[in-house]
Image (cartoon, rainbow, N blue to C red; front, side, top):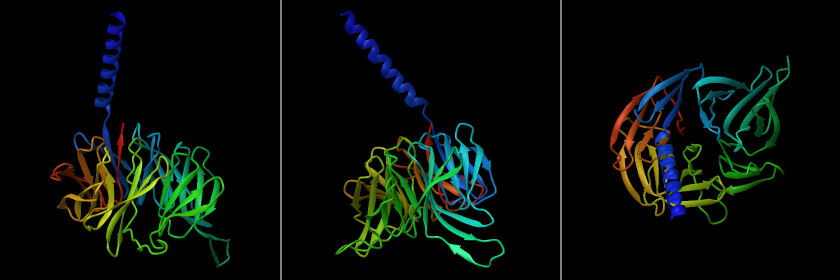
Length: 341
């Protein structure tokens, strides 16, 4: 009888810990725009911190350990400490004799390295000749601030997806490729422009990475064919690839998958809710603030943050797709991500 009471008491303590931990967790939207990063509290939908810099941000990614938010400004990457929301470091990749454009990047699963898709142009002092290198995937040690490896990769890689095994990455551009980081071997993973025999050519309007640390880890991209549209899904835990055929066609720059993996929300000029199992359109509403690029979800899946593109982010209810409010930003932006702390 006494053992039974201890067991019940222990179970009650564990339950209370789980409930209290869940109530402590908070969601924030990190929205980099021209010259400023806004941190938005998802409880109040207000900007609680603005970090200033002098640059235009084309992409961003959290480190998997949640300690840093990295901003890609083509020639530099800025590091934001998520505990203090301060700019703590800047990684510069171009010099007078070597111009490096970072077309896409991500952070390794162990948070120790950048994987950078780079276009590199070199020149020699006082010689009017440029040497344009083949596209490179650069592996960069963040702590030591040095390049530790590089690989020649196909043209047009704008998205880099890190897999959890730390042994391979997915490269997204005109097609999707898998790069083995140990052997350097590259194989076609999913064909867009080059789909293979008897398969339709596919086109993605753009490739946004909406993943956030601690979520389901399923990367997605909407694609279009002559006969309709679909969604490519890549599970970053094991690299497993799958597709969902959309029953209707909507133009979508980016999409995000709900925490329970039941729905996919896409956005461009409309906000679209899709059943992830069947591809059926659950609901669609026009975006009141016009065209938007990025889309984010709270960790409970209840609120959607659409934008930026112009200088605002619209907040919608995920069940009804009703507009809840608009958050005004200092300038235009391209990306935004949710972080749960």
